[in-house]
Image (cartoon, rainbow, N blue to C red; front, top):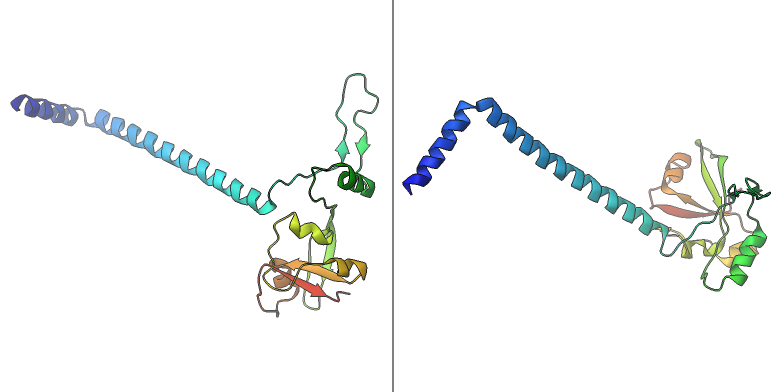
Length: 184
């Protein structure tokens, strides 16, 4: 037991004799452990954030965009612009039996919305009535568009909470999205 106390005492005397080296060693160990904890925490936060965003998109969702064909050696159609059409959508619905639901989306970012109070701009999307079955779009008040709205060509729009706050500041805060009928 006395040998153990001697070893412990000698360790403390050596640490005291070399204070700067001891401090720098302890600081290096603490810095390494802290850096490791920070990196692991950032990685886990990034992973859980991505998972949450993907969960909001929906399950088993695939996006298809038009674009340019890749450059292939000996190909005359490389770098040619390809546009998706409504016929492409219909072909996917009729010929791709593994596709449960498909929805064409027309999106514009240069549309300006004006109300009696303010004006705003943002992204506007034209979607079919079954779009909410593909994408996760919670509605706290009102309802989503339906087939009757489309058949009767009703002026219907679903707006988000931020657009509601900017364009209609007097309206009560009723949730994330609302449905407005009779838009002119």
